[in-house]
Image (tube, rainbow, N blue to C red; front, top):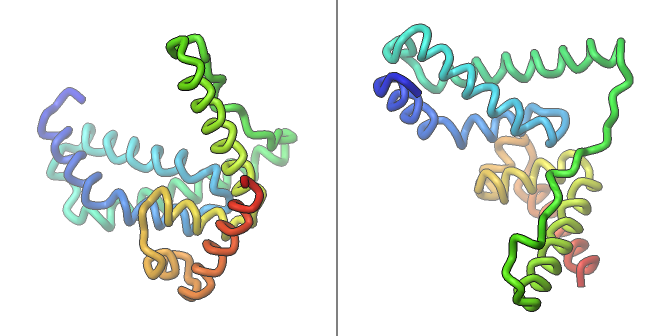
Length: 179
């Protein structure tokens, strides 16, 4: 970030809108795998606008960022639909990268604990990905965005009891699967 004015203005807008925009994007996405890409694209576009137009260009931070998010969601899914016409998409999720255990000290207990925790984390992640999109969104908003149950219910237009049901039922199933 070259201009300190732009950088501080970007940080100010990001800090004041991050949580709400992430919740908005989550509620509108068809697939939870798209959330982080759209979120990142939204704030990259924000920075580019600030860099091109100046720090004082945006007068209503929240409205501007939400507008960018809506555009990014629309573009993402329209491009995806166009691509489906021409190319068969591979829906397999790529591995996030292999863990190199040689980076750890030779302490077998530490390495073993790490492997056990990694296996459990991967199993939990896989289990959540097997759930319905609405359950995935509830988990994402509750655990990643740190929204409360009433906030999750409002964002997803669900009753609080429905959110609790999805959250607690899935946690119970996850616990029984991992124990």
